[in-house]
Image 1: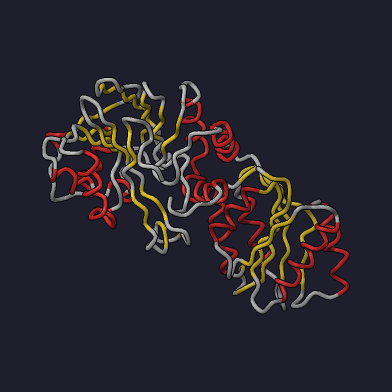
Image 2: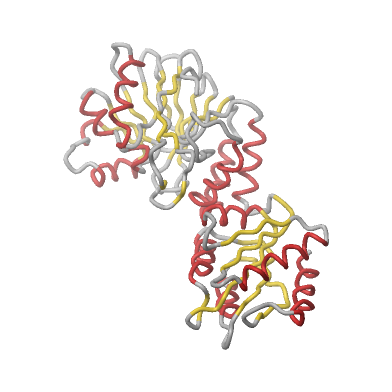
Length: 385
């Protein structure tokens, strides 16, 4: 990551390649970046801090970038600890620095920093307010529930840069070069997926701005082909499928349901259908959620368990529900040796989701697939193609 965004705007973020789970739940094999920015002018503004895990690394970078000057403002766009965790360290080092944030964020400050009193040094901003630094002017736009209620984004008018908070972020440290969309998609649906309506509202505000670069709080600065990134965000936040195909998510105890799922995948492929498949017991749950949203069709296949459904499938469907899964066709395959219950439970969970069409027939397997099951599987494959 280059440190110069423009001549007067610097990147001062840090990579974290030691963290195993982001938010204690999302696997990040290539780490994560905590992005922070510095704007040099008659007055100096820092845009967000970093996780306290990296304060000792970040503060010397800030001091070096300041080159003997003192920051006038810290703009706090989001109070989540991976971005706001170093506020108290920065405020202690620069006691004249003022904290610029939404009124809701200012209310949250004492919740995270009990020992500090920031009341005399906060500036609450609201929709459309501006802050002049000299040649640079910051304009603030509220983005409630993207993905916390206090969030705002910041637009620098002279250089046309949108500081987008968690919007347009992705998993992966900046020291690791990788394609943007896959880890940005996994990040979006698992972090912001529930709040599509709120993201749509923010996109409408962004559409009124002339944007040359997007500076998110995770992942790379976006400076080329912005229509591609904004277009994907529009697709994702409106819950439209991105790809035609079927995602098969299965939960198997002793291998019988896994065999059925893979046989069914082959049936679909033979009909020219694009297929992705995941073992919910072993594959990354966040990636399974991502693929469920990516494809326009879903098939869930699970064993019965304790008169219910095998727990990893219950967990998967719960994740889909809380992330507002919708506007998809879904097929159901259940397995049970004496009293199949998985199909009933999965159907009930899916029926709670918006605009989900359950495709018939639901297929029931008894312990192990046998030739007499193939016609029902073929019928479902035909209905799902």
